[in-house]
Amino acid sequence: MVIIFDIWKHFPIAYLLFLAKLQSVPKDLYEAAAIDGQNAWGRFWHVTLPELRFVIATVVLLRVIWNLNRFEDVYLLAPNVETLPIFTYYQAFAGIVDQGVAAAISVIQLLVLVGLIWLYVRKVLKW
Image (cartoon, rainbow, N blue to C red; front, top):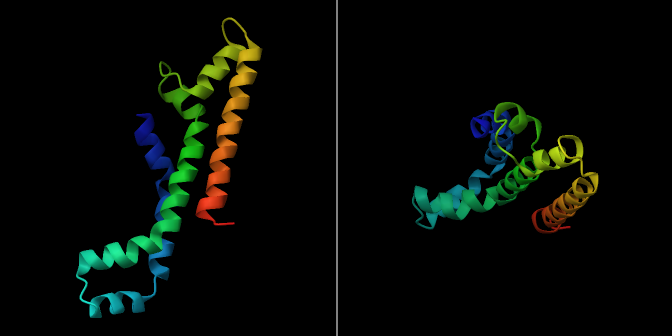
């Protein structure tokens, strides 16, 4: 249920990013590929997919970053599922309170997210 909800919730942003990029692909590239003898499948692999590389990487990395921090959706829709943010919440505020472990988990999660953001900036944005 959480996966279906997550797809439903984040589908519009991915759709708009892909649609905007697909509409901005120059038609000359498709014409040149057709003149070179590429069929529709070849034009997709050699023109469309390379043009979508930035958008695909953006959507995948943003979704990974967002899903690593997913708390409220999982907590409300699947109370028996324990992800890293829910485990951190239980360690800090429920049952046997161990805020030191919760703080350590949060710092490690922060370092992983900073690493993913660094990867996004260096590899996808090519800064």
